[in-house]
Length: 492
Image (cartoon, rainbow, N blue to C red; front, side, top):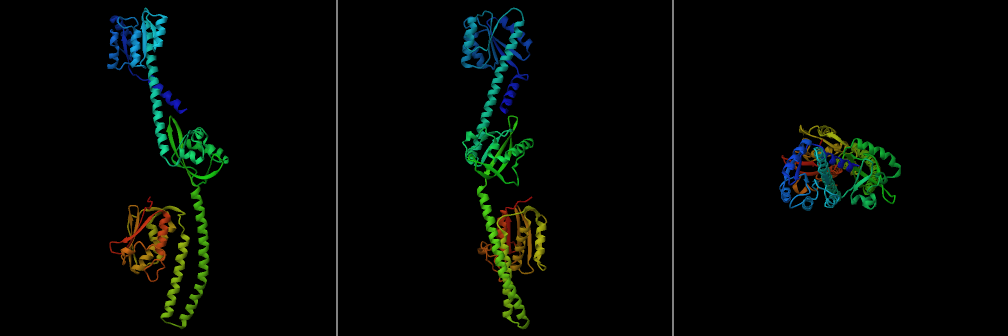
């Protein structure tokens, strides 16, 4: 349908407008040639006529001029009209050629047709013949121009299709292009392989055939709504989409939609991704996290019960006994409690962000600082902190752990600064810093240089960073303290 519209437009463009028609009139009678030119130009102001009284010069005239039509007498000395026609057709097969002769016959007409004459017109008395000739010239030129426009349009379509095919072939993802009726017009080999069809077997097929039967009727309505408001977007955002292969096997997919405007109609380009393996990994991850959570809960219960008993008995002992041994016992029990808490946090964090949304970083920093209870320490927050996209609860955990790490190594009166980076933020302090050779190890589970450290604080920080797809590195602040730079953050 679209290509037919395009060809019609090409024909209209060729026949409309005020484009001039340049005519070369070949006739050995100068007076008749002059009269013909005058009447043709009166009949149609778009027509301009140049006369040539020597037929042998016609090829050179055509080489040197851009003529739209040739009108030639038949009986001329030295070279007759058919011989002129034969020479013209050898070099210019498409230029309109009208034989306008005073002496004609069926034999001449037949031979002229075999040589490729465009039209044949007998000279007559009176001026009406010039009106007829003008009309024949205009029609012949319009027809050739329309054919040339249509041919040019077809070449453009072929070039466009070749370019689109090249792009599709270079695209590793499965791509299907459908028209407004849902008919598959183009696709790449990746799409054919994905659905297990021969490529040509899919071309011309309804796109609804690529989805399970229960969803096909609803999809027709959704497709029509998309054509009315075509915008690039994911298909069925938040829904589990399913496709079907040639053998009837169904599989989960993600689909991105984008409009293409071709030949006056909207086509829909769908990029399709098989997410079977991703779904399998997600399900396995859920099972692993569930088992880990169950294990952490059991361990927590089994450890906290005897720890609570030991703590209670330590308090009883401390009422009647004092000394370094009792104090060391209390420190050990406190460290065990902190270790259990960090172990549970680490086990339950997971490796995926569950609830990402825009979060003002300044608000999160102040909330996390308040949660650490750092009354004697100082917080310095830059004025230009961004709003970032993240899981707010996990961001708060990250900041709290960095703040506690600063206090653990810099003391209760440490100064902590939080500032912006081009694609993230930094947290630094004026404490003793991290030796350069130790900076790669600080995120390892169990690594700690503090006497009462559990070795999980910065490991949890790195876990939260990884879950968001961010990056983190430990370096030195300007004061020589520790500096943590979090980058690759989505900023709004």
